[in-house]
Amino acid sequence: MKTLIVHAHPEPKSLNSSLKDIAVSTLTAAGHEVQISDLYAMKWKAAVDAEDYGPDASIPLKVAADSGRAFDAGTLTPDVRAEQEKLLWADTIILQFPLWWYTMPAILKGWVDRVFTYRFAYGVGEHSDTKYGERFGEGTLAGRRALLSVTAGGPESHYTARGINGPIEDLLFPIQHGILYYPGIDVLPPFVLYGTDHTTDEDFPAIAQAWKQRLLTLESTEPIAFRRQNFGDYEIPSLWLKEGLEPAGRNGFGLHVRA
Ligand code: FAD
Picture 1: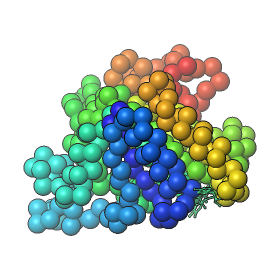
Picture 2 (picture 1 turned 90 degrees about the horizontal axis):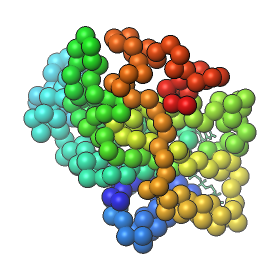
Picture 3 (picture 1 turned 90 degrees about the vertical axis):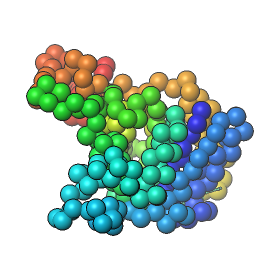
Picture 4 (picture 1 turned 120 degrees about the vertical axis):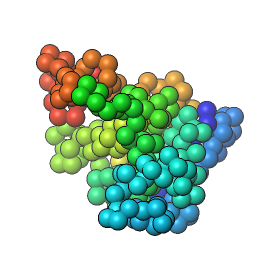
């Protein structure tokens, strides 16, 4: 495997950084190639602004159009181009982050905002009355697989169907479906550690062992069965799921996962 690890934690001695280090050592020892984007260490610029498009930026700024034009012209900033090249190099992408306010830390969202540009990650393929682009199962990053490795402070019961935070698969849907699957990446079931604010040093060996086990079985893990946009499951042009395809008892985000 060629694995890109995108890591988002400010503290090198944190649990998240330890998980990142374990991923590097485990995958490397198993003969895989690894690249890391350690966003805090890189002092990653998280906010999209006109500086991203230099003197060619339109006035008023049009982020999608400007980013697509810069992508086509090869004039995106070197930091963004380097991350796009890493994504094209990788066959496996791991996002390592703590759950902050139900989602990824802002620096990681800012990596997505700047790197997943128009014409690279969205605005790809035919857009017409009968086709809404190549996305959700197709796209620039098709053929790749991704895994979220997430730590949550709250206990697992808070993230179940009746739990106060809602099911973890719903919280992660915007990242797994809306960001990763959108440009074509298949998404593996996440590795989630719960109750990490009460994790102790004594818990760590078992956590490390479970994480290594996941890493060493990535190649044989089946992705989440998200429905593909352009292969008959959705009405055209509304992109409504066709009547009768909803699995029994499923609603909400779960409609977009095959039974
Ligand atoms: P750390 O604090 O670095 O580590 C936790 C424990 O792991 C340590 O005390 C230590 O005992 C152990 N440990 C770490 N590394 C090692 C090692 N190498 N060897 C042995 N033991 C080790 N939680 C939610 O559930 N939902 C939310 O919406 C949410 N929002 C948040 C928003 C913010 C802004 C913040 C700051 C926190 C939020 N939290 C939330 C809690 C957050 O998810 C957890 O604090 C975080 O996931 C813990 O990960 P960490 O890497 O920061 O852990």
